[in-house]
Length: 198
Image (cartoon, rainbow, N blue to C red; front, side):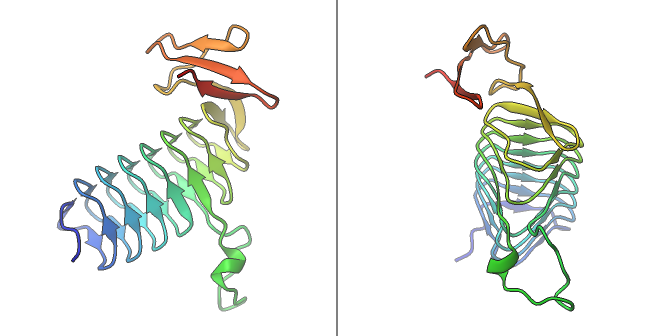
């Protein structure tokens, strides 16, 4: 039996076979294809498109005009800003010219827990955006983004480290305490990695 615990605007298109979690909202002119998987308490805004094979965790916000293709997966609490762009094929060709099986062209993308992607940013497929990372508006991500990193520009480059709450972290040696929420972090390794102190 299909789940009906989500709400969809009368002008949204939710295809039979889409899996949508409880308390998720699908707004006007959004299209969810069969085989798409969307978790609980998500917000899918106007003109969003979720293709078969895409997977969204719980508490994910998809702002207006975002297209999420097969092979794109988000963990819980991810924010996708207006008109941000995903891809899933590094060498796209129309099937009228070159016939390929999905396994030969599909390049997957993963956005980890709490990651945020700014408006009009582009995430090139085959990359991972780390936990609580921030991708600045208009950035073009061409390689993996570490946990808690703020990246900006084209191509996207590391700018600074950020807290789970989004505030910039100021490290003294290997340690930082967020000036906004008080969370503590430690920095290790080369290249550097940042993790919350538990």
